[in-house]
Image (cartoon, rainbow, N blue to C red; front, side):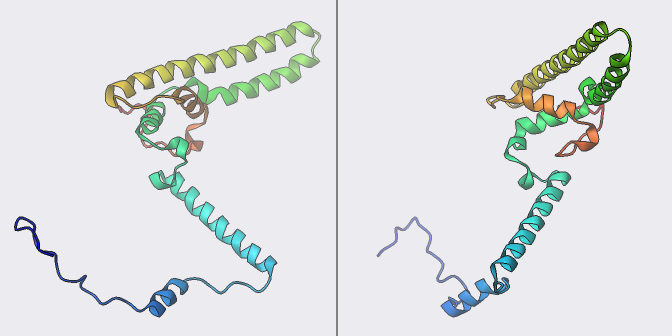
Amino acid sequence: MLQAPDQPARPAGKGKPTPKRSEVERRRREPYAPPPGDRKAAAAQRRERQAAERKRRMDAMRRGEDWAMRPVDKGPVKALARDFVDSRRLVVSEYVLFLVFVVILAVFFIGRGSKGSSGSYLILLIELGIVALIALESLYLSMRVARLVRQRLPGERTRGLTWYVARRAIKLRGSRIPPARVQRGEDI
């Protein structure tokens, strides 16, 4: 077969001899321990391997490594949303947990009081106010993130962004996974 004059010649060989099949098969089997003799031991060994893999993946996710993130957290749009929420100085939704604790205490104290139904009505209004506050703040934050995505990442989809931003904003900053990459008040 003749080569065309404008094509460069192929290099001769790959630079090393082809290994024997027995060597390749031996190398492939080396890192694995022989299987245990009974099913219980095999199951225990499998559980240990799976637990070690889960721990390795969770540690990598806590460090913010991209390969370990869940599919819902991957992508530039979600990264921008996380950075936006994490850079906010005051996210009211983050402190809702403390407000709910106060409402629970109020249920115990007002429920035992003589007011009865008027106290229950007040607690219901407070609970509805908390839900409305979370919804309004989540909507506001998601609209701001969607605007940022349209500016910085044109053509990217923003489907599911409102729910993602709401869930991120509700969590306390220290318990967010993947962890915050930006400081509070930092420009993104």
